[in-house]
Length: 364
Image (tube, rainbow, N blue to C red; front, side, top):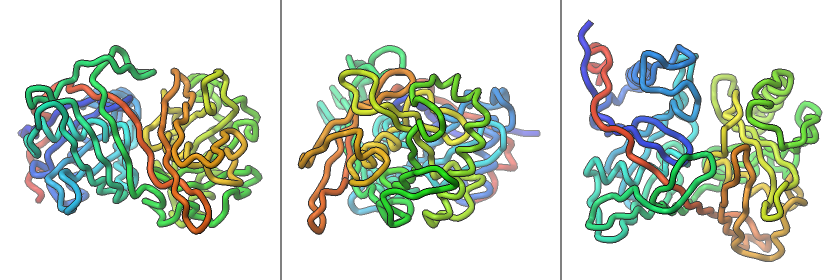
């Protein structure tokens, strides 16, 4: 069996990690692309021992970049979630953490040119249609990864990358409230189905007999909870118009509870969905924040928005917290969430070629 190398950059984006590819180096055919990504990541083994994945859903993510076809944007970002063990690739969602690495990776690939000091990169998230402005530190017109910004759940410190997300309400289903309701009863559990940056099904932890403060390990060991949650998630997906999501990672699932810390807005636990996220997805942080801003939702009573058009929420997760800035606009007399922002970090880990069988490359 002969092999051929595909250029890639291995990046950490926020609390996720994965290869970043130039779309020009990959086949356009979706089945052929999936075969390459499964092989490159090593899906099919719990440790991804035959690929560059890391044995966890946050380390089997893939970003594919190209010069944007969108007049507004500089870069098109196409996301793929490769499963750890099932040799599946899901192209429905996007990933906000991996999106943190899009600006630096696009600059490293030469898809756009860096400016002196800071470079604003306009990103079109192909999977959902969202538009995102990313500001990357580029002293001497080169990407800098050194800085003082620290993320809970990520070792060390790095240069800040600010992200502002637009066009995220209803980005997957066409509606902020896909079921038309702020609350629904699904299989005996009260949930809010929200589509804001990421379609999610959100419930109070107490409705599952949980505190909402459990560790990731405690939740992952609770098989009865996961079985119950999956039933609710799949039935909610049908109500959201998303069809059979048995093999899709969307909609994601989230649990909420009253904040533990004095500075927290609410406690959150986010699921990918078949394992607990070690921290919190960027897109998940936005959807959870939006849920708290919607009157009558399951999170309505946890955060006092008053009449603020912009509010920073501190969302507690298993390894600390994440801040999200939620912006609202008056739409038909009601303040509704329209955009969100975060500050995260990224780091270039490696660059080179990942090798796959030559016969997988020849399909265009």
